[in-house]
Image 1 (tube, rainbow, N blue to C red):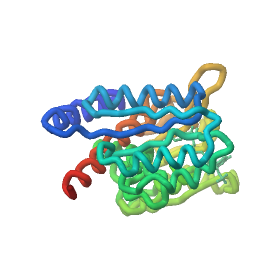
Image 2 (tube, rainbow, N blue to C red):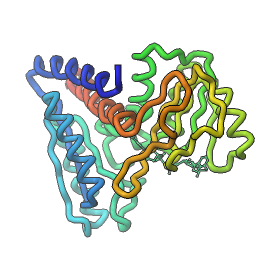
Image 3 (cartoon, helix red, strand yellow):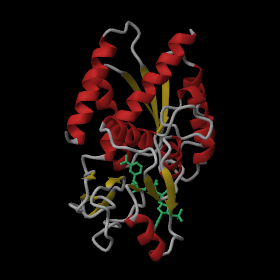
Image 4 (cartoon, helix red, strand yellow):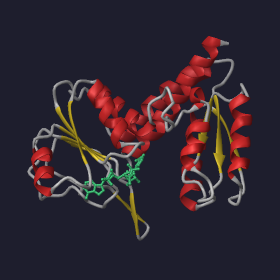
Length: 267
Ligand code: NAP
């Protein structure tokens, strides 16, 4: 089953569940940056929501908004029970402190899982983990290598794999090429989130049984490329596009459902 088919199936099941709910799950998006990439991501999130019957509202602030304007908008949504989730679309204009904004989203509504206080997992690692488990990829006791250590992908991915009892190694820009080769060639699962076109290529001898999850999204001359050269000789390699991006979007819907169920059970 392709990732597209996997996600379609999961969304169909989610829709059937939401159709039976009298109060619909609902989230808000706060947008401050009016760039084309942000607009495209937001369109995707709104489309996903409407396909499964989730309600979503976009609060679009001018890109010259002050930090205070954004904090006030977040505060209003934090306090409004109509919204079970709240996303602030990143990146934000440079006059605004992104880390402060991430921390200001009420932790129970932080469906992106970006804040260190959030009780939900960041969407990209969470989407990847569910995909691995749903496809019966063995994780326990396996050598998992995560390349990249960002707060939104690499680090939370490593933590989730460790929680599943993988032997986890995190590599980054200070890792030597020799060490990179050693760890990559011993890996059963490789998650690459570096942001460099075809960072992983044929220079390594991957295990034929390896599973490679390509998180990278590199836009070059209007084309999308992953961090991994296509068609490596491994058991499974996720495509770009049509791979982790879809899993991330699915994970956002699932995080909203968790926030919704928590809110409903406590009200
Ligand atoms: P990031 O914050 O820029 O982090 C990149 C990481 O790669 C850093 O930890 C960096 O190491 C490491 N790195 C850079 N050059 C390296 C090298 N030569 N060897 C080994 N490690 C190297 O990026 P991010 O936010 O994690 O995103 C990574 C990629 O995933 C981007 O292409 C992004 O667009 C994509 N992404 C996709 C999704 C999705 O849904 N598909 C979601 C999020 C991100 P240092 O820490 O040492 O600098």
